[in-house]
Length: 265
Image (cartoon, rainbow, N blue to C red; front, side, top):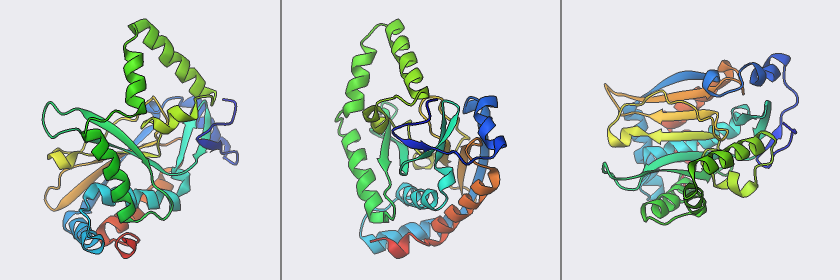
């Protein structure tokens, strides 16, 4: 609301139609648009295998997607925007959040993790970045966010609601502390859920009202030779044509390895 934030810069050169959108559609829930991208599963698997051969690392589909998404968001920066307090901001850096289970069982807790994808990051860089944080999560090691949430949830319910309300107000005014934004997976460029890894179909997932993520990607299990990626997109940040071009770049990267395998090391 005040026009400045620690995680982004206000975009001032907007058309009147784009600038008014956050006021006539104030929530992400009413602004979400859905896209489906059906990939050639054999081609994508071929890219994964070539990346493994090039790096000598256990590259997965998730690694491939995180790296490709980081490159696409850097190339199509208007998708790396978000809405807060009625204003549209350009995010500083590409930040990707993703989910992982502490263990593959009904009792395994789901955790949300977040990492910055530096400009020009290779597949090898992404493997190291993501596997480090996943390893810490699965070891049961608590990060700063877990510790802070543990303290908050020990308080009575009305106090928790009051604190959350205060934080929402601080966020609207751009006054949320940097350490909280940096550690919160809900403040990111994109959230990825690889449901295919647990043999599930991909839903069209909702966008979260907490935080400022404008893009959600759900990866489903391959079926009939197709690998589905289902996206939910906050249309307030950019138009559909710009988003469609980004999806075409993502398809090219995942199916052919362009920009990924040829710079995998």
